[in-house]
Image 1 (cartoon, each protein chain N blue to C red):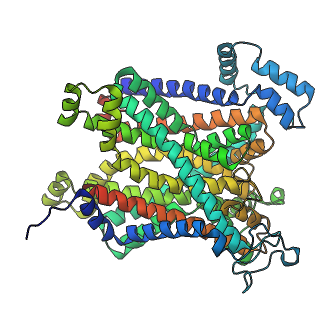
Image 2 (image 1 turned 120 degrees about the horizontal axis):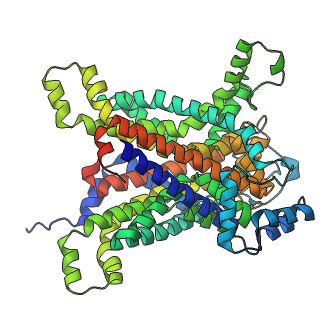
Image 3 (image 1 turned 30 degrees about the vertical axis):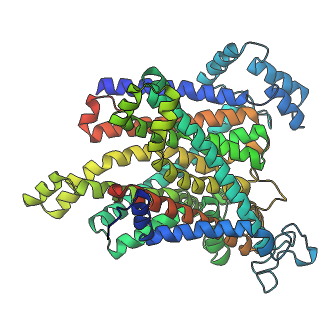
Length: 326
Length: 284
């Protein structure tokens, strides 16, 4: 187990270095110096800011020096200062990140809570009307653009029915509310964003769970379990599900980047001041340091998600601990 | 009367045409192609024609799907928008496939540290949230239709690389490959003449599914104002106007979104149908 953990941590750091290299590379992708691009295209950048930026990136030095310096600052969470309002990027991100994490966790829980039962039931009742309905749902789920679903939900529940608020994550008068009212207010605001961000994953996971369960249920040891007279729930939930869960956990880890990337869309649409919206605003205003900071941070979160998935994978399947899998 | 054995294609076609959803998907894909091709004939109005007297008109007999915030005909703009979706989808996937094949083939053919490095690179690319990566690049290169095609292509080749690598690894053990090597085929000949043609069928599937993904990303980018730029009509950018007028003009949101959904659904159904028909053993 320890060597497995060590191996995974090693890969984690290799990936981390790779990501900083790629992000750094993007920064130098632009023709000329990044600062030129910033200043010619962004009238908001003053000569002072340009000078600061040149100094920050050390653009007069060789590339490898620039890179190591940039990484050094990155390790100490110093991502520089935003062009837009002079706040440090780290501070801006810390303000915005909690709500993004809350929404993504809630949608992960929603995905697992709904997709697993759907997938299991579909697999244990193949070609039943429920299975067919689930298949249609999955196909539509895969094809639905998130931003469009968000707007349709807003039109339906916000404009036509008037049940739910269509923007923000709390009401303006939240200060005067009791804790329960505040919680209810919060839930009302988060219902649509969480549903929308979970929707795509819901389709993917129920389908994946179904496929894995179908595969496992065909195995000999399931027939053996049935033959020795175990009840159907024990066979399905203890013998089959535990084995089917292994690949499902990995896919869960792999779906984290999609969820985080999706934050850009639903936070922008629902006017939620999270990291996704901050990223979008930074792209529009070409706030370079913020863009780079969020990209690296989003990737670190993804890598942590993958690492956790790998570890729970090892927890669910003892044989994994013994050899290094790719 | 001699019975001619069925060719591989005939067997494939037999399986494909008996798969209802796959045929439906193929039909959708073809229809969108025809619509894009016949756009000048099918669109009733000039998609760029601004009619200030008819701003945000609800669907009616003149304007089947209503008009937008500048009084332009939504139906005509959607018809022309199909060209953008297909163009971006196909070019982006083309780029992704080329990169994916190259990296997957080189990694598995040479193996060893080359394989390790390239596959680690794939892992790294997969761990950057794609949408962040795309937006970060667009912030530098200016949004335009050509730039988003390149950016989508460059950020979506990893699946293909893994597929090709897996195929090559399996093929390398086959006798015909050993034979070709024994006959003195060089690396290029081995990769492109012997291995690649036998590794392509899952790549076709992945290409068709990739078009669906690229269309979704393009529409999201255009919706955010970071993709195809106005006045070029695209499905995503029509919906941008729908968002700004969400309390009055539902038709600006509903119809282009349905167009995206149906098109993407078509490519997904076709792709999965191809997969089932090419590898019947994998069918779940």
